[in-house]
Length: 365
Image 1 (cartoon, rainbow, N blue to C red):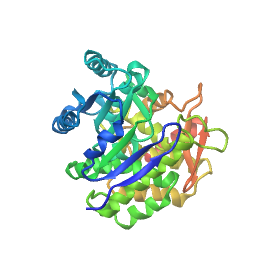
Image 2: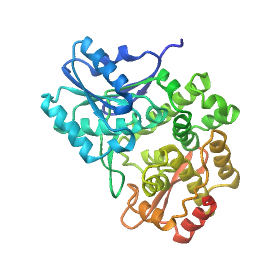
Image 3: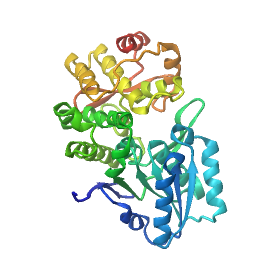
Image 4: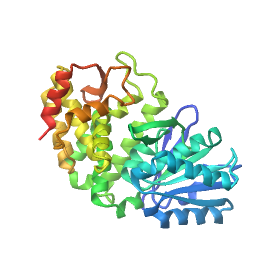
């Protein structure tokens, strides 16, 4: 079994993302001195893992509590957050105590938000159990819950004290969940590290197999991309002119989040983002900022691992309305992250509505 690797996320409060196997022994060290009480927030589907983590912490001398929440996006509501706050309050949590999030992207988003908001901020450590959680949600300190008006519209920036990515958890995942998570990996290839695209194209089957060295390299490279971006722009505040900061990580997410909302989250996040990436690639092509070959490569790479590149919903008006409440919008202007070539993200602001519809026609089947 290979050794664990550590990817440093620099910034005001630096921390490590550890990738490997059998990492639970690292947890107490990441929580650090002074923590007495720990709440392990986990989804119902991972009760066994959540309780095992709680028991491990109790054996390590902590006062550990398990807080079970709904599975998936159903956990990301104000009602579930309030339930977690109540559990922490009843257990007597103080500002020196901590939260541990065990689960996929939705769980880590919720756990991070609960930690950010309880007593105006307590420590959080993430144990992501999905590919999406490892390469995206658990790293970078973005936390959030959904509202009826849109996804992740309520949240806070709250860096974790550390992230433990135990690759063994991926081996029991449904293949469709692994494929969905690869959308965020491929995204990192287009915005920053084209070597990711080369690896996927060379062996799509190994990219989807979490037991392979290729899969591990893809995970580590994607985490490294995110770590580098958030270290420079931790609060998504530097996208001005030709400089694109943390917003680059939203490549494909504007339409992707709109599809998720219109479909009532029945599509997996990665599936929606995959379609969103092809959409903004077509939009960039139509504005003369991206070549045909790179647009075609979007379809080829995503299709190679089983991700969708078209959308059959046929609800352009609803999607357009949903995009207008995207977090990147400013006033009445829609803003999209595009790429002008591999590894060069840019911002497209206020495109002509006719171009938006034309790009949608290219992905609508």
